[in-house]
Amino acid sequence: MPTHHHHKPTHNEDEYFARQDAELIKARRAALDQQRLRVERASHFMKCPKCGADLVEKKFHAMVIDVCPECKGTWMDAGELEMLGYVKRSEISRFIGSLFGLK
Ligand SMILES: [Zn+2]
Image 1 (cartoon, rainbow, N blue to C red):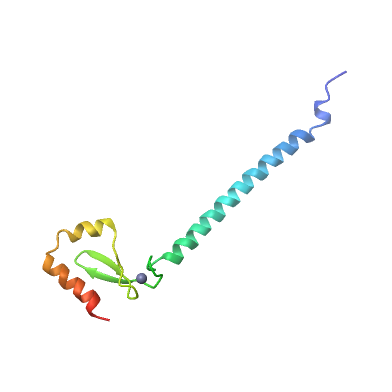
Image 2 (cartoon, protein in one colour):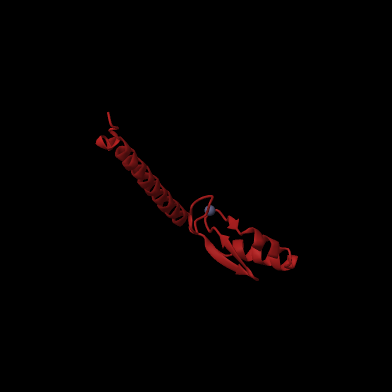
């Protein structure tokens, strides 16, 4: 008897489509994850990590410090924290005073 390979190609076809589906699902999943990450990031953008209130940007020398008017939290990144080391202490305390003195 000759081989009947080409008489039943459905198995391979199914496998092919299953693989296609898996790729498609993987791509869709990745896209959804990306989207969720974007929404997640956007919802936290300029929000206080502690209480969720809108942060206010305060400029001090070369630094931009995010201040929460609600809980008085202050947020800066590591680079800004480092810059703070080069600023005179008297200026820092005056700045901090101005942050929490006004409103
Ligand atoms: Zn806050």
